[in-house]
Amino acid sequence: MTETPQQTVLIVDDDRISRTMLAELLKDECRVVLAKDGASALQRIEEDPDICLVLLDVSMPEMSGYEVLIKLRGNPLTADLAVVFISGFTEEENEEQGLQLGALDYVFKPIRPVTVRARIRNYLKLVAQRRELQRLASHDGLTGLVNRRYFDEALALACRQAARRGEPLNLAMIDVDYFKQYNDRYGHPAGDEALRQVARLVQRHARRPDDVAARYGGEEFVLLLPGQPDFGALLEALRGEVQALGLEHLSSKVAPCVTISVGAVTATVDEAEEAAAALLHRADANLYAAKQAGRNRVVRDGAAEPAA
Ligand SMILES: [Mg+2]
Image (tube, rainbow, N blue to C red; front, side):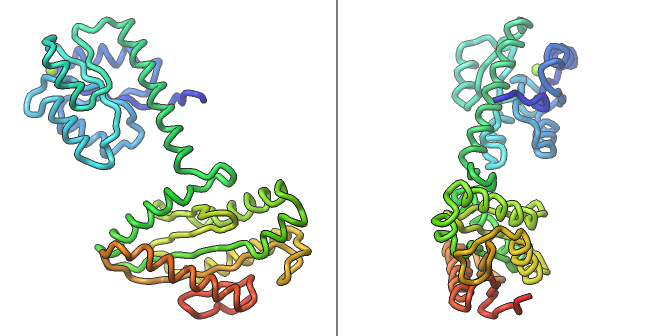
């Protein structure tokens, strides 16, 4: 695991000299950004998702460091952000309060430069490891796509957003045709490579920030493309691209190469908790229909797209 030089640390302190001193101390360890009060710190954090560690003064006018941390913890997007208090209060109860709020550490002013730098270096390592663990937990090791667990959460979120905005959602389930027979004939390493190549093509169609391409299981992928107006054409293009890879598959009954079947749905959803499951169920039913109709095709909302 390597430390990324791009790690960004936000220093929040109402005292300019303290800010500058800390910034100077850390300039070789990370990218440093500064804020002089709680409100601008919260704004910076919202605008800069690269910020992975916050060094937070406790005593500031208007909003204390404690209040800033409570606000961060109350927002799902920032709830896990690493925070270290830097404080002139040396009472034990202040330290206790800070740590109980969920700060990583509580450092007393005046700071001792060498130890503070070493501690922050350790925290940056910790934060990088935590990010890597999160990445591993949410991604599929074989294809690099996000995994089913991540996808299920993304779909639930997308349903809530789509319901609020009254926009339709596009969901496709994608299955590699006769994949068991491919593995049987060409072996598992070749099967893995075929999945990687198909995954790469699936991923290429998830271009916008809210798009999700995931490995759903075995040889099954899902594409979630909210607000994509050309969904049908896009899926038909994907189907053609997979066929055009030309990966030999002489045990396939539909083509002499690897192909996919796609079941897709475009639908408005409501806020109901079952919305996501219902959408998946409809896509899955259309995938089944695509297989029944002979595979290597897209079935969307119950209607077969004309095969190229
Ligand atoms: Mg202060």
